[in-house]
Image 1 (spheres, helix red, strand yellow):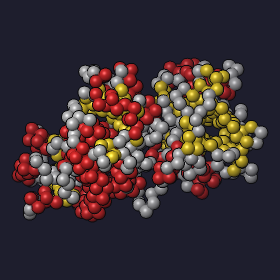
Image 2: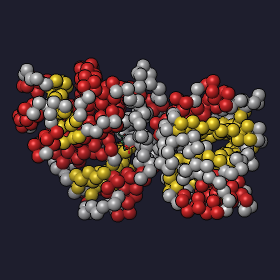
Image 3: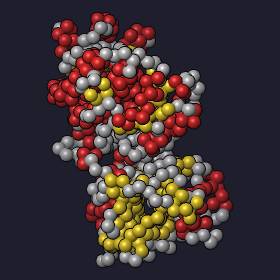
Length: 631
Ligand code: F6R
């Protein structure tokens, strides 16, 4: 939520294209408004716009707005906003100024005590021009400066007054050779080049410039400056600024993680849907032993005994990651026979969960590794004595750093705001985890080997599913989008229930239409009332032990004149014979527990093509942000 960029260089040049291209890479974090500020000849110049950088920062206009001096710029900041306090508008867009216009800041996070700070600042004569929580920051710094503090002290004093979360970057005409950063609860790092330092909310914004960076931890600041013709930095803690820290310089070496382009695809979402076979392959790669029929999860190696003795599993996650956890829950309960409780993180934080921490292992599941509710749940669980593990996609993210240990999901950068390939990668980890827990609880090596062999086949079958289903799903989506369906429900039984929940979530996010999801057997207990000629039911029912029961429910829907799309496998399609319903056929699997890996593909494509038919932006659906770092 919100993306920050800051550049400082001893090699003066036109920094605007670099700031814009980095902001474009951060668009997934927020895209309702955007802004840039640079120091030009002792003055701060600023441009702010409603919309995403790729939509509003066109070359011509920007060149006119920032006339580049012959010797170029040496410092600038930029921001993409996802509004939390104050609606998207130019006034509310960052960077924000103090009264004198001598300093500009960009902020990611939420200032919880902004109302009292704002009142106090107004009583001291400060004038506010926006309705954001952020604007208190430049005014607090300005006030502290008035009271005699140096720029750095004023910045750190201010940071220490803020409650809530922040990643902040500051530039000031008082010291045009200095970029100050502070972090608490929102991600912030800076990349290191020969003559340039680039601060960003995420490494993916700046990977095209450098793969070497330092990530700040909560409570830390960085003072980046130009001294004697080169750039330099110091890092310290906000509350004890004189105590300087030596931080590890990290290097991202995995090239695939750096692929931030759409390639041959017209959207990131389509690309990411099609990347799922390779993501699944990468996620399981090297994480099992064919000889022993067991999963080998290096990240959990020091916790083998705890996993072996665990009496129950608790998962905490939000949205799509929660839906993946629900599938994981069925896998673990079925294969390992351990009870699993899957909690939505925003609920878990505030409710009493009567589980015994010493007997329970907690898995926090998150693509971004930044989701505030999940992060706080982990912290709360740790306080209560749970051992916490992560299934996280973003390496080095806040949750990854907070849990005791974990398994990375290896989905690579997910840019499309609606999560697709991260879900599949999370499923892949859950399959391995379930096998591991099961092998420790009596699953034979033979059974383990069998499952692993089938798991190895999944990427090829995913490719086949995409090839076989995409055009029919597209036709169906376009047909129903034009038909103006009033009600849409996604239905299934058993392990397919969380798939129906995920399908409904994807559909809502992308089409902006309400969609329901139910266990198929629940239909007759109420939801069937909505079925008529204007209702569509998407039923996930590959051939399994519940197939005949599912056919009953199908008949009930058809008898009420409902429209139906069936997702079934080759055997299921044969058994159904000639039906007056549309059937999307996926490959038949020996082990029915593996169906979610294939079913999800036509379901994602359905939401995707339906949304396209409605003219919606599939990569950046309205009102959403990729990392939800607020409560
Ligand atoms: C849905 C979606 C969200 C996220 C949720 C958790 O497409 O992307 O529901 O799954 O906000 O995010 P992470 O996984 O980053 O914790």
